[in-house]
Length: 396
Image 1 (cartoon, rainbow, N blue to C red):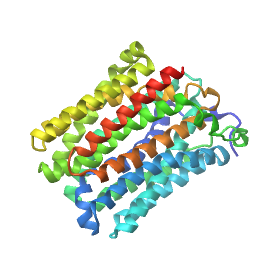
Image 2 (cartoon, helix red, strand yellow):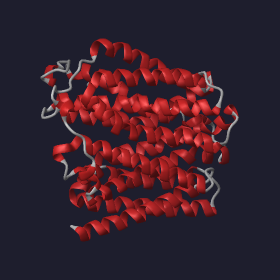
Image 3 (cartoon, rainbow, N blue to C red):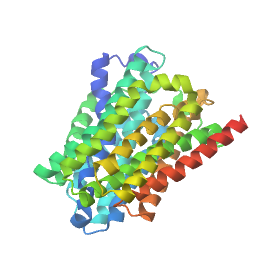
Image 4 (tube, rainbow, N blue to C red):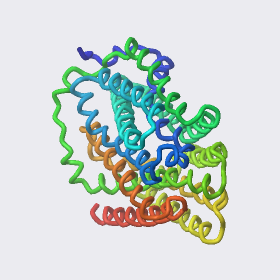
């Protein structure tokens, strides 16, 4: 039976974070820890690079789309069953992935693994909203969870490379399953239901968001920014390992520098956002990414694949990503304070479709072992986003 008062969740902040944070990290780690072995997986599973690309694409899509499914389920059934079910699915599919030797089954299990990750994220943030809404600790909880999540792209590939080099690729997925099992056991006793009793009776409607131009413009901007990072990590293993001759560990270190640039930019982005506003920050973010794409094109035309020609331009695009993602949620959700949960779910669902479908289309259409998919994606999508912002300015 759900609690009438969600604030009966009475853990101290450190204990609560120890319970919350691992699920937040695991959902993202399921993507990033696997990157160093992506170039080797076609030979291991006897399939094509395009099929292995789908293991990234479908994970990303399911992570977002699942939220519009598991969000209403968590409102109706409660946070606890959705979280426990998601953790069980994530752990089980991770173990199954470690034992898989066929491409079709591997792909299906990756989709199921992402569904488990999506359920964990929905239950996690719904619980945070239930317990900490209107309390001073809310800012601390959200900032710490976001900071932890930002570290995953920096350290996840490094951990994956070390595991793969010493224990083999199957150990990567066993390494995902083990903490999921531990957290599942702990949560059986420690994760109390927090859903307000009357929340399951509320209706769900996406129509107001779908008719709202600012929602679409800023969701497109968010998808463009996150898609840039998605296309980067879809192509980076092949560019740096296959073309530039990096080891899996060397690739992971180079990849981590981009994540560190994003983390460093996030520390001072707030002062610029305050000065530029939402639309101004997004426009500058898009312009910065386009500039990075032109530098990447120059490197691709005149230099061999290397840190200088591929990673350094991505540093500039990373700055643009941060300026954009710092404000797009506020811009997209500004008109939906009374239905924020539904709007957030749709916002992340649509951006995941943009990232997964459009980003993958560029990777497939161009040579995924070169910088061209990233150059084309950033140029096209950033221009489209800027046109949408111009229309929004005229509309308002």
